[in-house]
Amino acid sequence: MARDRALEVLATGPLTLVQDVGRVGYAAIGVGRSGAADREAFQLGARLLGQTYAAAALEVTFGGLSIRARGDVQLALTGAPTPADVDGRGIGYFGPFLLCDGQVLTLGTPRVGLRSYVSVRGGVDVPPVLGSRSADTLSGLGPEPLRAGDVLSVGPAPAAYPNVDLAPVPPLSAEMLTLHALRGPRDGWVADIDALAATVWTVSSHSDRVGIRLNGEPLQRHADRTGKELPSEGVVRGSIQVPTGGQPVVFLADHPVTGGYPVVAVLVDQDIDRAAQAVPGQQIRIVLDRH
Image (cartoon, rainbow, N blue to C red):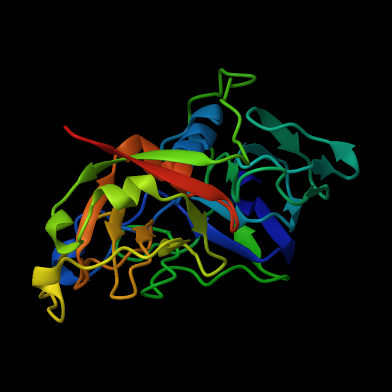
């Protein structure tokens, strides 16, 4: 029966999490939104399967996931493309396909990008926490990272049927990534905010869902701010924060709701998802928009 459908986890790769659109409306009590790091890729997976964004999916970091179907399930792959196969038969991205009872889906390592999404028609049915099934790696809210042997129930399929066979998606690139940002609110805390845009930054291997750590020529504090610190204030996804060492951090999905280091710029919303696909070692240039 449909309610008995499930996904059995055989292997997880470096990190596989359950994610949806996140916890909305709890920042005032210190709970961040979390949710899919690449929101556009997650939302595309839901649309391909004819369901709402409330349906949880699997976010796979750097490939390596292997799952077996219990009952027939319809899936869609989005985000960073990996070599993917069902029982050895190649499967493409950005379109729905059927994983029949007992068949195994396996994802390799992404050719470009970092995070892939496995959406399932009906959604991954784990218990919600504060209205969301998202795993927040900073607070620990939501389901634990997946482990081999986990069995994930699949929710009931929606009444609507998928009506798209294949979605055209711009390819990801391993070349230098250009991200646009707006200045402020604390751009005066660095000696030269234009140095943020003039520097070619490299994504650190210490980056995660909380934020991307950037390596490059450190930004210097303004002389008037030397030795001073800000009281903690609210921060948002896409904030570019500069700790005392001068190496910027770009906040992603699991960012804290407050921070005491100056936020000198904020990524424009459409570029935050692109930032979430940046891999360690990739170069980034930040363009400061004046309006």
